[in-house]
Image 1 (cartoon, rainbow, N blue to C red):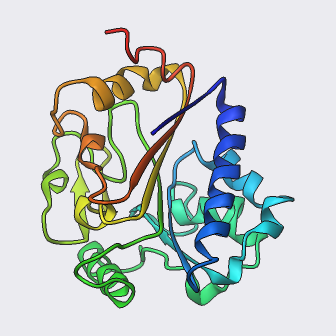
Image 2 (cartoon, helix red, strand yellow):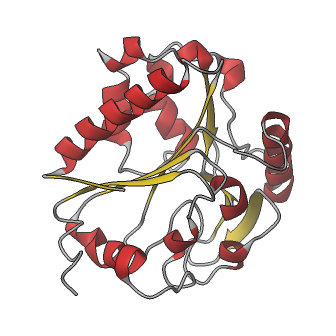
Length: 241
């Protein structure tokens, strides 16, 4: 489902309301809400908004369990660390229970950190059925999502839920959730805005299937819902090429 708003502030406001309403609805029927957060710059305004009234009070933070979609293997003190950014803009400002926040470790070997994270996920989810209640992700102007970058083997992972690998173009290790566990989520939502994303958005939604070029194409929920919250600039090429 495509949700087009005029500009980034309008996208942020619409998505904040949608996420809050979703959490409220789901928690009427179950005890906990499992939520995958995304890093980067795009969600900062969203996190800031969710940390303020009325959203802060509407969300039952003590029943929310937090995960990350991917992480750069840099220390938590590094500004590039996704968890650090999320704490600064959201988690430090809301009454979430620390034991229910699951950070991808960057103080150990990346492969070991990936195995540990997969073990954590296995304590929440079985091998079949749904995984997360909500996965929040973004898309780069190269069409990547999570740490699934164009031309990387992890795009095609079929078994492991979490993988670590060295990304040569960035000269760093990345840890990422993979399509097999993400696609089992009940809800997946992409936050995407800006004219620089318009070509990639067109290719992902309306172009030929080529996940090696546009990895966001591999995110296709098996039985859940896929939503895109975008602005008019990002959506400018849709239906026109």
